[in-house]
Length: 75
Image 1: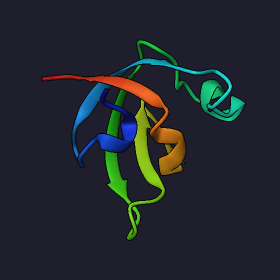
Image 2: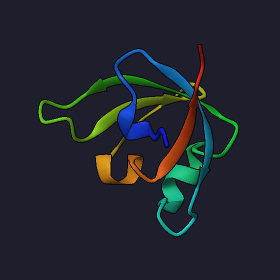
Image 3: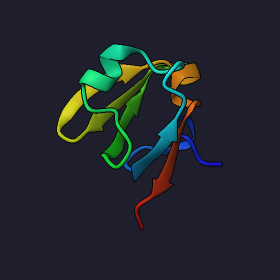
């Protein structure tokens, strides 16, 4: 199972699914929803948090949250 936490810098993917209990409401409001495109912009020095671009919105999320969101890579 691929998750946002497994993305490498510059990779793009489509959000597949996640448990609504795990993802904070703020992320849902910022567009972290199934079907949306996501790209890893960069990571912090110790790989946490992850800086993402989700449908044009830039946000940072903790790696433990990112590990709960399934993705499908865009070739």
